[in-house]
Length: 430
Image (cartoon, rainbow, N blue to C red; front, side, top):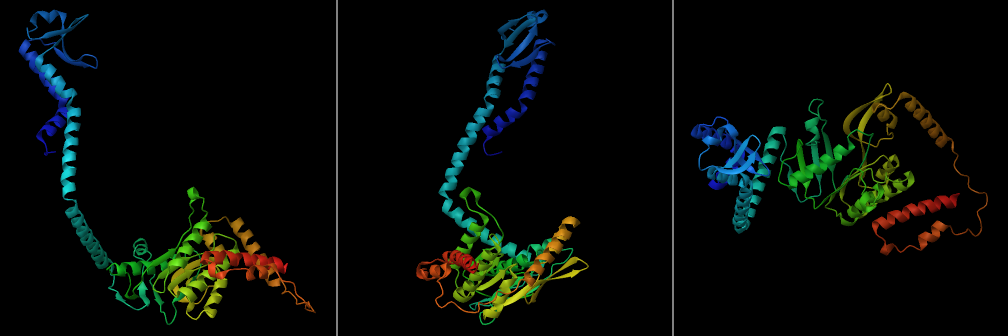
């Protein structure tokens, strides 16, 4: 409004047409002295003045007869015809004026596009800096020391979003430390809902916020410059592309293994869970070894495969950590504290109980778990034969292994081949 007087008048006419017609009807009654005079409208005839037979003698000469009906006649005047034209075409004319005004405005903006783009970038930068400063002040963030080392130290770090929702219960901060000369590969275990994913994500967010020029949610922070942050978190599929959850997981893992450098920061959550237990364990094991030995990056690797805890004894720069939980009277207490050492339990039944799984199902699951654990413990180790064969036959797994062209294999090819070799080895043992 206010840009074009004509456009404003047309818009007003569209919204006040009924009142304008009623005002004209009132004036015509007063001028002609015909109290029964009415102005009506039909889609066929448009606007017209209707007068009954008893008052036809009082009709002014300027009234033009338009139609004769049973109880009177219908007329039109020059003023009513002009008003009808204005009302019926008001919307059309308004749209034409709006279109023309829009095209003029678009051209004017286009002529100033380079300056407007520069202005937008400046405003965006100011807005981002102001937002980072405001949230840092409100929530007690700290300015990180960003340097050229490959260290990552976050004292009492917090997740900037989760802590807002955990205001009543209180967010439990954790100290995260990764050092290229010490522990740069953290194997993270713990039950579901304990906070493994939150711990990893808050570390990644701290890195991103620090290198964006912001403060971080921690008591103190030292962050060596990171060239890329890689994440493999959550599970999803691409049905339209024909890609299963496991395929998507492997494609993301492949991108990490191909692209990560020793300056990268990697967080991996539950890799290998989209396939069978042994396949998943084998893939997770191989990925962990590759990131530690070949890539040599800072990484946090969360898993439910407790067998992976053995990696801390095999890899010099790897260490086990777990997000602590305690069981008390068949219930689980989540402490959300990051502590050294691996977790040897998954607390699956306790989590199921918290989720409200029916007691009869929990009881059956507990009995089945005890049965499976007893079966594993009772399985005797295979005995070696008394006499070794003088000419042992070459196994299929060995033949496949010898035929591999390792120089042409991608990391994902290696993972898939490793899983296949594991299956062949199991078949040979049978």
